[in-house]
Image 1 (spheres, rainbow, N blue to C red):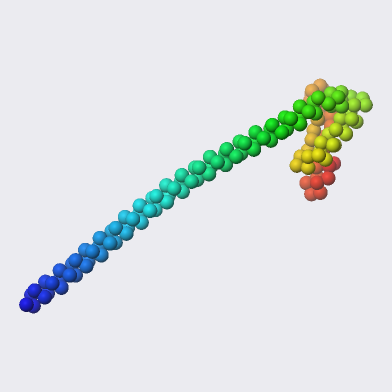
Image 2 (image 1 turned 135 degrees about the vertical axis):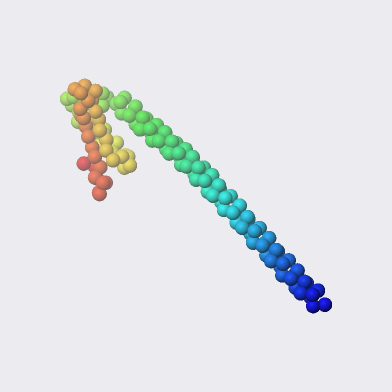
Length: 134
């Protein structure tokens, strides 16, 4: 009888240890799988976010260039801008000053003449501290 009882205890202990080993092994496999999945998802999300940011930046650049090109085309058609010499230079300066007042997001406006090596004919800058046009 003692032998059967000792065998029964030993069988119970072995079964318990095997069950515990299976539980720990399953938990480790689950944790490793979850970690790999999380790393893969992080990489995928980072790639998707990068793509989204690039798309937004391209759209923003396109809108800025489109807006600026419309302003340049409008300015190029003004008589005050076409003739920069003589009395028209003062009129061109007034137009550029009005543009700076109308567009507070512009930091500077320059009108470059095609003649004489592309010299600046009119230039306005905005003071970063006060926002005043100088």
